[in-house]
Each structure stands twice: as C-alpha cells, then as structure tokens.
Length: 345
Image (cartoon, rainbow, N blue to C red):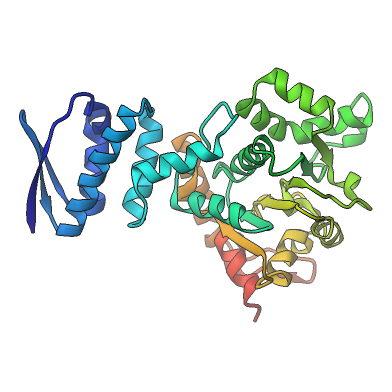
C-alpha cells in the first residue's frame, strides 16, 4: 500500500461527479481510497491502482486546459472504461472519440467495454457483426462510424439497409407508395442520422443519394463499392437474404450487420440468416463478431432491468418446439446463441 498526495487545481471539481459518484466509481473499481482535503487530494492503495487514479486527475486537468468539457453522464461512462481496461486512459479515450467525430454534431464515444471493442472492430475489419439486446447502441454506433467515415472521405456513400418484415401488421395494407410503406421500418436509421448531422445536411445527402436508406430486397444484384453499408435488424433475414447481402461487398467497402436473436419476427426463428451466419462465418478472416450484454444497455436504466427480466424468464422456461426441433436453452439469450451456434453438438 502506498500513499500519494495530488495538488488541487482550479476547475477539477466537475471530475468528482454528482455527489462524488465518479470518485466512488474509481474507489470501488480500483480499490483505492480517495480523501478530499482543503489543500490536496490524498490517494491510498496499491501502487498501480494509485497511479491509474492519479493519471485520471492529470488527464482531466489537461483536457480542461484544452477547452474540452465533458457532461457528467459522458464522463462517468468514460471512467467506467478506464476502470475496466488497464490500458485505457481518460485522455486517450476522449482524443479517439474526437477523431471519430470530425464533422459530426456529437462525439462518437463508446460507453462500455463491449461498445469499445465493437467500435475498434469496425475500424479494423471489413465486416463486423454486432449482436445483443435492445438499447446496447449496436445501430447507433454503426451509423455514427459510417457518418464519421463519410465526413473523413474514407468512403463516398453510406447505405443503410433493413429487412422489411411484418411484426403482426400487414405491410400491404399501409397507404402510400412502396417507399412510404417501408419508411416506418427504416425510421430508427433516419433518427440516428438526424441525431448526428444537421437535418438540412442529412436531407441534402439523401437527395443526392450519398446516403441511401433502402429495404433489403433492393440490394439483390448490386455490387457496393466505396461504401459503408449497415444492415440493421439482421435477425429478420432468411438464410438466402443473408448470403445475398454479405456477398454485395465491393472494393473499399465496409459492412456492419446488427441484430438481436431474441427478437426475431420470422415465422421460424431457427431459419434466421443471422443465426446461420454465426455458424458459417465463424473464423473467416476479416470478419469480427461482437456480443453485447444487458450491462451494455445505454437507454433508460429501466431497459437494462427489463432485458435481464426477460432473459431470466426465458432461461426458466422449457425450450419451445420450433418446427421439428427446439432451440437449446442457451439459445434464448444473445450471448448463449453465439456460443451454441459456434460449437454445434
């Protein structure tokens, strides 16, 4: 155990968080005692842990002097990453987020360890699968990375795709043209775009077809070059549709496929193209699978508890027959599906 005293610099107080919640996070996560006094901040704990906490204070002060201010929710999420990853630093995370956010209204910043792995996988691989429950940021982060790539001129267009699968309602009975019929299915993708870019800019890019939002059926026969392609709600693809989509990739193209296998709207969930892709494409060079869990939920805190409740309830039930066979019990959870499919019995 060692002790270390840090000088209190003006403007450091926002680092403490509401009711010192950020300090408690550092104390609990790194097993360090932080004692605030009038003249200094006293740290006590293992040498390595004390050094990491001291680095947080140094980084925050450096960022403040550079004119960067972090909202408390954002700062708290970044500190969680620092605690979870010994190699991560507060300044390094913020600077990486700024590089991804050139030309974007909001900083593209992961808020959990799995989100960080997901963002890094998208940067490093030509095709990335993001799988997990609702609210874990799979789609939003993918769209944010696509917008960032477009603004940095790494690609010349963005293509956003969703399978238009009816979830109880009949698509054909909706009024309007085909585009007006499928727009409700694509609305979450529009929402993410408008959150990241000014509405005028998004409308112009859509008008010029630099950003294309289309149902999956429109992808057949195309070769997508110099593009960032995202397929959302991939659990609702058939095996044929998934094969068709993953073979659209052209030169200088990147694809992200997101889905939640616990929310399949297909008549036979066992025939989901996403489920088959987990098995078929496992181990293929250039493809990365990223799995999210309930702890990664970044919506209202109640959503995380709802996801856990459904997960616990599903695991407690007997497997329901699907066709002639039943999915294994592990397959009812997002993580369980990946493990079950990757290693078939």
